[in-house]
Length: 102
Image 1: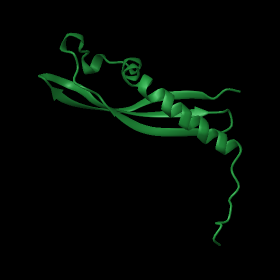
Image 2: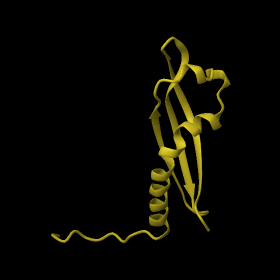
Image 3: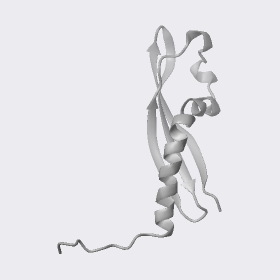
């Protein structure tokens, strides 16, 4: 079975930027992956640059899908690779080995 992933926005941080109120400046997120038996989750945050005033979406009009679109491409590949590696180790854990110098 292939690993499956879920990404959620856990919180947003806002500021006034270039005269615009409630501009999202930090997106806090969690990505979880499962192999059907084990689950691994990572939390992180992304700092967002100043918005284009002509395409600005008011804070209370944002959807989770819109906010996720801002971060998924840079986040997905690295996070999924880390989750895959952690799940593989959980499925086949390495054996503890004594230090060679005793």
